Image 1 (cartoon, rainbow, N blue to C red):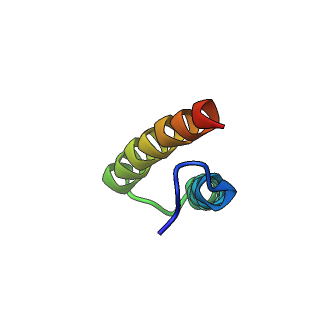
Image 2 (tube, rainbow, N blue to C red; image 1 turned 60 degrees about the vertical axis):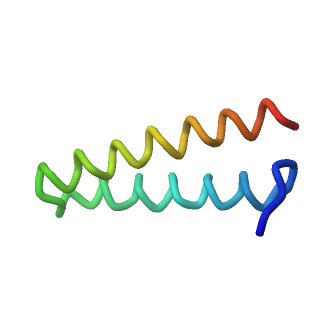
Image 3 (cartoon, helix red, strand yellow; image 1 turned 180 degrees about the horizontal axis):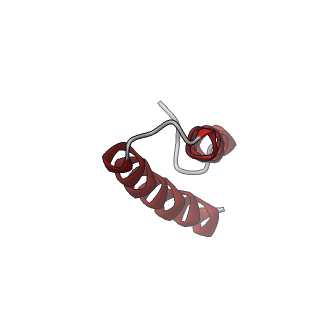
Length: 55
């Protein structure tokens, strides 16, 4: 499990956001799926912000 100051935690969040961005750019998601993915992105971004503040 990652510690709060583990750079791998932030790297994993960045990877999730990049993958989500690629999926959204693909344009193959239904509107409901895109909305759910955007919500997940917002949560990941908030967590990434929190991780950055801890560094």
